[in-house]
Structure formats: structure tokens, C-alpha cells
Image 1 (cartoon, rainbow, N blue to C red):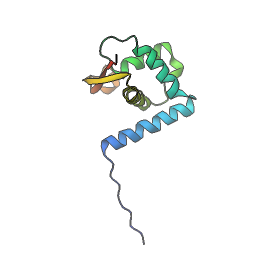
Image 2 (cartoon, rainbow, N blue to C red):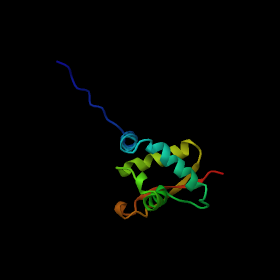
Image 3 (cartoon, rainbow, N blue to C red):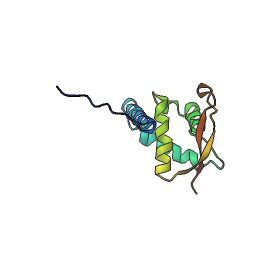
Length: 114
């Protein structure tokens, strides 16, 4: 008889996995979603002078490019991570979320990389 070894994932590992799954699902539902959203993010962030959160970008997308709103809000986590990885933005801290669904929990703030 084989024994099951419990695998304990950290909160960060679970978040990483959830974001990756949501991004892949968005790419499946909307072909090339991640490439298209990052191109749009690059254009949008080039016009940002102060600090912002990904929620600010989400609101812009919802108003001006509703076809790029992903099926799961978890996919937005990939935008911030890819933007930092591509050196488009710098993470500068946290602020209370402006999204009513999150009840003001802290979210990352960014500044455009120069």
C-alpha cells in the first residue's frame, strides 16, 4: 500500500498557481489575451505620471476595451507581474484598493519605469 504524502503549498505558491491558471484560461477564451493586454498596458502606462494600481488599468480596459476583460479577475495578477518582469513598472508600495469588492485591502502600487 502506498502512502499519500501531503503537499503543503505556501500562500505565494497558491497565488502564483491561481494567477497562471487564470491567465491561461483568459488566453483560451480570448486568443492571445496576455499578449494583447500587455501591448495595451504598455501604451497605457506610457501616459501615467504618478502612482497607480492594476485596478486603475482594469477600469480603463473595462471602459475602453471591454473585449479584453478576462473571464476571471485573477488574470489581472499576471499583468502586474509581467509588467515588473519586463521592467515597464516599479513596485513602490501598497495602498488600499479602490475596488469595492475587495473592501479596501492593500494592493500593490506601481510607477512607470523611465
